[in-house]
Image 1 (tube, rainbow, N blue to C red):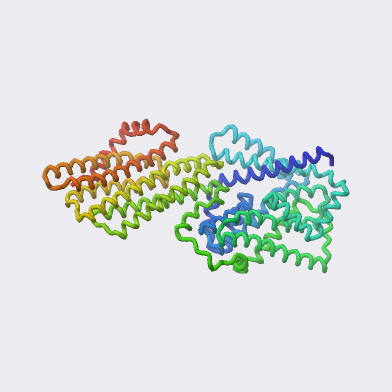
Image 2 (image 1 turned 45 degrees about the vertical axis):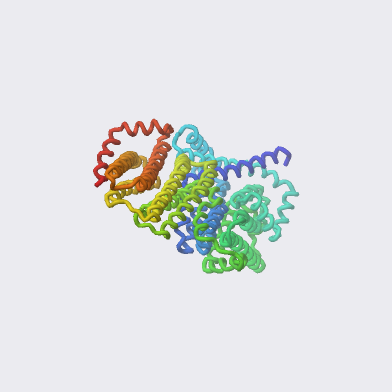
Length: 587
């Protein structure tokens, strides 16, 4: 091989690795976090976890990515370590799908239909369709599918380029001599592990080995230990991901290592013991791409079947390696709750967006609970309940800080149009959720002032305030539902209710002035009433902000004032306003 042959080889390798990365990212984006949510929710039994782990990995084309997600699940408390064991086993089976696809390159036949199965035949067609989708369609879904097709085509072109570049190596004695050294099981395992650890993908390293097979110089005696090493090397990604994680997450990474390490040792010992008795002739035969795929699959399926009844042993082994120290304090329940915003999930943006939505839902729910509790304290003040509202508000504040930081990081990732809209909506709305909880605290402070002064509103004033409070609770409930479902149609009902709340608030203040003139109320009580009604008005305003934000982002409208003017001028707005006026009548 000359200098230019090496250039071709490394160019093919670059295309191969890039194609695998692009295809995997495209597949993950098209899944929209659905596969990961299934992985999170449906791991009740070990067998089911194995099947799910295999399925998800086969689709996203990366056992490393699946294992890193599992480490994140365990670290955030979403998944138990016992559940993670099965998923990790399944991930090792799922990663063999890539080697079977790549093995199609070894098809040798003059039959037209069999030749169509060769990647070199259908990859150009996929590339053409993918480029058409990318350049001439506006649908985000089609563009993502186009990305997958182009990624796969680039991967296969890279594979063909590598195979073509290394063919002359069959005539180079030095290359054959180097490969012969790897027939030593220990050296072969080390070589496979190091290669996979460097490129962080067992699928890619197996693909490289399959490309080398076209030289005819790679015998099964060489390929076998290298493949075993590749399974060990893929554990490096999960181990690196576990740095800085909690004990259980580190144990999940160790389960992955022990599964492959012990499985490799047992498999190799059993194989060479059989070989010493039977003297398998296949070891001296030249390996082909399909043969590599067979060995890769046999090892991972056999190891999973053998380990399946002893999954608890893997868990205990990991716990013995990563022990709990007596000095270590357990993470508080609240800290555990915020772990759903795991930085590891950012590597799979579609799933990270879903985790952001879950956190935003919790934040909205906490803010709503604080408001309901605050309103119940007006006229029935309890110090313990008031303290609960303050704690809820502090929790919402923390959500705003942590979720805001998380979403900013996420916004820099490659997101689908739908996910990008979701991130924009969350970034705009979390401030309004936080302000609603602030106003809940303000209402508690007004209730506390009444309690400390031994004062109370008249029965009439309490009834009027009850109508306004109910309207505010209803608009908050409606707004949070609109936010959760991102329902633009239902968002139209927010503005009429916000307008009505403004009217009710003004009417309450006008009636208070009348009572003041009649001498049935005091100026001091009027200040407290004004504070409460103002807080309720502001809450309705924040609900309006959320509704407007969802509508603007979904319909690509960005002039808020113009949008609100258009809403107020719409006939349906007036109709909705008239309908709800009958539902909230002051006594």
